[in-house]
Length: 189
Image 1 (spheres, rainbow, N blue to C red):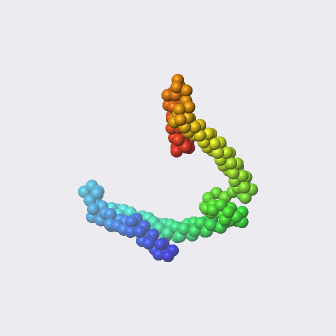
Image 2: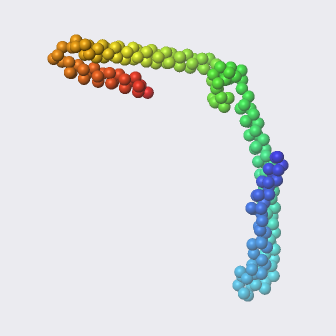
Image 3: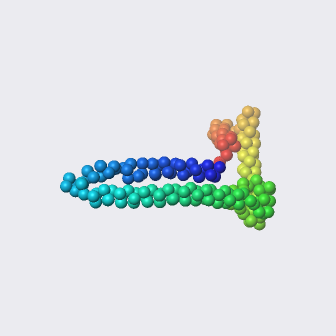
């Protein structure tokens, strides 16, 4: 495959850089001669100048051909080095392998030493415990509010409320029930 790639790269660069690159392809001797004043066109130096430019152009084309071959070979070498680096990145040491087996870390992610990984995991466990305790307390508080509201509504049903503030308490308890249900259904993120 490497030689096919090299051949293809050489062919593409050659056809792009070298096709119609000779001086004859660009300008003929007759066209070149016509660029000079009429009285100088028959001068043998014009033809000699054209031949000299032709030689320089051919040398340039040869240099371009050589550079194309060099670049194609360099491309193969660069691809080979890249493949070696990719294979090296896939190798993992024992600590990383342990972390991958335990926690499913991808081998291309940055690698942490096992001690640092354990320290970060312990910190994460503590954070999750604190968050769990906070949520547990919030749930207990909401449950107490719901029980209180249900008790108040039960009192209303059986007429245990004092007549003077019954309407205000009912409205307040219903709003409280609504707010508690909203918090339970839409917890803050």
